[in-house]
Amino acid sequence: MRVWLVAGEDSGDQLGAKLMRSLRDLAPEPIYFGGVGGEAMAAQGFASLFPLDDVAVMGYLPVLARLPTLLRRIRETVADIVAAKPDILVIIDSPGFTHAVAKRVRKAMPSLPIVDYVSPSVWAWRPWRAAGMRPFIDHVLALLPFEPDAHRRLNGPVCTYVGHPLIERLADLRPDAHEIAVREARPWQVAVLPGSRRSEIERLMPVFGAALKCLEERVGSIEGVLPAVTRHRALIERHARAWDIPVRIVHGEEAKLRVFRRARAALAASGTVTLELALAGVPMVVAYKVSRIEEAVARSLIQVPTIVLPNLILGESAMPEFVQSDCTAEALADALALLIEDGPARAAQVRALDRIDGLMRLPDGDEPSRSAARIVLATCSPHAA
Image (cartoon, rainbow, N blue to C red; front, side, top):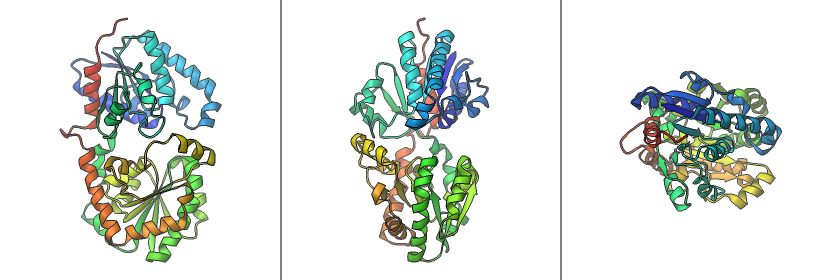
């Protein structure tokens, strides 16, 4: 069996590696893998057509700057798939790159099954993309439980919720008795998550620092702890030095998870980290800022009432969010103060967080990667050359 995988960034590489393991476990015959991936997939014996960094580009300006390379890599990827004649193609996230590949492959090989692992955010913005995927995608594997309904509503391809990879890490996110005691003890620990992209960090670090100072004035001594993204370590440390309140900066995945297990509350940029915090049971305030141009575009395209993933899963605005002009130090501090101290606001959010597990777990308790692998194998059939 020949399975071609095409990832476009690090998160897709991680998903691809887990999918490879599960496919090997479940397939009735040996599998040969090919395509594009990164270090995690390489550790599973995957030989990428070219380095993942060549196509791991986000944002309009960076994409324009790398456009000749991206177009060349798209052509090379398509040519490789057509020459290899695999039994199935699985594209993984990064729709700007992977969908360009899939469209061209479908034209060259109309009968080759194509599975899209990770749905684009058609439920949030540019909803017409869902119907536009039907001609070149046979099955979408969704990471969020509300996405299959969104694709049905928007006339998208067949879509199945296979589970978010974070639900495989619940043991790493849940505090033990000692860590629960730390959550309750003063000075309270506040997790500070200003985002993983340079632009997010630049915009949010100053207001987050001011918010922590305001918070301390409201509730007394606190300990801010910031799990830094390694590649932006110097930038984060430079911004933190300008704060009027000290913050402890930690590095590495284990240190980040330890912070989540001990934090009384969190101040976070909108993104996947809010799901990590939710599964760790950490009450949070969510903030986001973009450029004025991006804001103007977003206002005309965004289709959802909230940008916070746990809120979308819950179907309610349980986590307060402050976006653009609402994202001020005073507003963030006021909302955090209500979550730090015991009271109705904290209790209500804790109750909402307790529901996240049941909504995200798969009914049969299966692991997401194995659920995804079963659908890939069911979709896979020898194609007509």
